[in-house]
Amino acid sequence: MAYKTGDRYQMNLFPPVIDDYVAKDDPVRAYDAFVDILDFKELGIPVAPYKSGAHEYCPKKMLKLIIYGYSYGTRSSRKLERSCHHNLSFVWLMGGLKPDYRTIARFRSDHAAAIKKVLKQCVRLCINLDLIEGNTLFTDGSSFRASASIRHTWTQERCKEHLEKLDKSIEKLVDETGRLDIAEEDLDSLVKINKELLDKERIRAIVKDISKELDDNSKASLNTTDPDCVKTKSRQGTHAGYNAQITTDKKHGLIVNSETAASSQDYNQLSIQAEKAALMLEHKPKTIVTDCGYYSLKDIAKVDNDITVVMPSIKQAQENKGLHPLKPFIKERFTYDSSQDKYICPEGKDLTYAHASYDKKIYRSDASTCRSCRHFGVCTASLRGRVINRMAEEDVASRLSDIYHSPEGQKVYKLRKEKAELPFGHIKRNLGAGQFMLRTRPKVDAELAVLSTCFNVARMITLIGIPALLARLHGTGC
Image 1 (cartoon, helix red, strand yellow):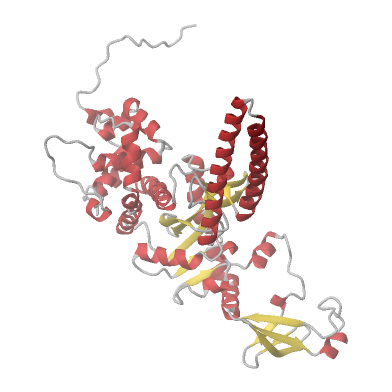
Image 2: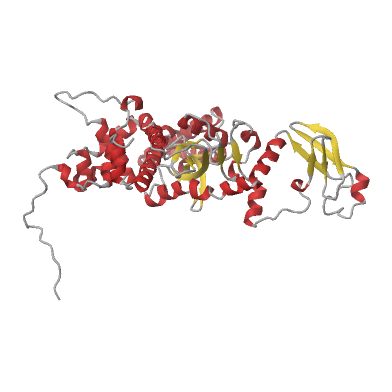
């Protein structure tokens, strides 16, 4: 049986110019053209005209390297350097330049704020290409690991326990030092103990500084490797990480905005994300859709009144999944009559206003009516009658419920998983970017913006095709 074999010593001739290394419809050409049309002045990266004796790489080339590398899961600066030597598409993109990993890492770190702005120009381009409408948006969050270990996360409780152990160790070492001083022997052991004592004192001072920083900044926890990351939970356990927030458009699922939140949960994040998305689009969306993780009535009340929020409450979401069906006498089964300021129970009995408490109003039924009701003991077992609390933002909850249960609300909410969760799947699975490479929130936000831009460019290639996209990026189709 014959086999195909290669000959590494056979003479071959590469094309005479680097531009012939890749085909005319190769995806790398789309990324190259995309970066070429970016406004670097707006980004804040100066691109000086050619001068003799150049001592640094062209910023456009470096940005092309980072965005293209991230688009194919090559994020490490060492792997990017290696690709510039061995991968023909990278050789073509860089025009034969081969920056070392320190240069790549330094550029990415020094220009983090500018790199974050790339996504805004990408969104503007998508709007011009009629790929983003900006009328209906979907927001979701997902946990990403930080470039730090959970073992370096400190809380006040951990600081207290660690200081107590250190104090006992130091006390024991001091006693041992005193004993050796009296004996005036075994000097090697004395030197060793004194060194260990100094190490314990140094660690004690560090832990006390951490405890003080937690107090001064009113933080629940602090990671000494990356002070901006938070404690996050996922299917893989508890880790030091970031809560990445992404907002997408309904038309093609393209990312409109992305950034990390200062909290490990989505709670209280909706108004912030709606505002940031409006700034990116330069106009307010008509509708924003999200899941029950964002359900905070005080935060939802901050969202512009012109924006329709489609979101289930936690109980409604559980009911939809069949986890906890709504019980017959929960608050949602009672009807509020705004004209008479009272609640009506499922049996048609009134619960009238009793008194106010902080940010809520309390409504109570007649005690004798409840005790004589056939559902007494099921609806309530209190001899004083059934009580309903009405929060200050109850009108917001009622409006949310009506919108969510409306035919239009149900129709658009069914698209949430498809539109909001797809980018996370692409970034984490296809690009292998479940963990950030950089540290501190500004740099992590820049990295998330690059990943979001990569997702958008990949979608543009899928939707338009490379030849047509190149034509539009070069100005012949826009």
